[in-house]
Image (cartoon, rainbow over all chains, first blue to last red; front, side, top):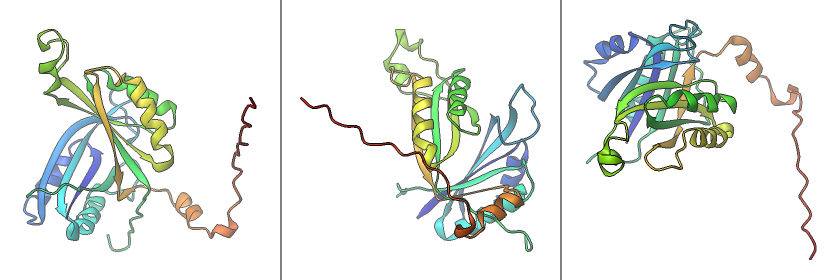
Length: 95
Length: 140
């Protein structure tokens, strides 16, 4: 079973995360998008919004907790305004 | 991360809404009006319906905006409906939206909120809940 782990984080942190997880053999896919957000961070660059990165990682279920915790640690979720990590199941499996 | 701990939150959903460019702000505002905290918006490029609709396909903008909102289970339907109506998704070619259940979420939770949540249920004050009486059926 494959699961998807997503994360909203400050701009630039996504690329750093990709760089760090690049050699992890258990990660099936990793994608970074750039976007804007209204509630995650204290600083506001554009009116009420600020720039952020959205990272999506595809990983097998048995490695999900390790990767999830690793992402939490890298983002620094023990401090406020750092972002959010979430996990959701993927029901349709690739052949 | 040895002395730090992660608190996993459950019973949440992610709402994803893909609409034509520049419509995201209206949708985010509608979601916030019914209780959503905020949203993350990204740009995307769409294909498919554009070729089949509009005058030579030019009236449907291929530039899209993708809105992602994480909400609790109890407010999910309300936010979803508000976003749907604000985005005019009942009209052809306006976009698509969907909702996925999340296994878990992690984010910063202030210590005082954590302490409150970890209190035994007996010590918590009973919440007043609004009850609605069943309406009488009109007699013929």
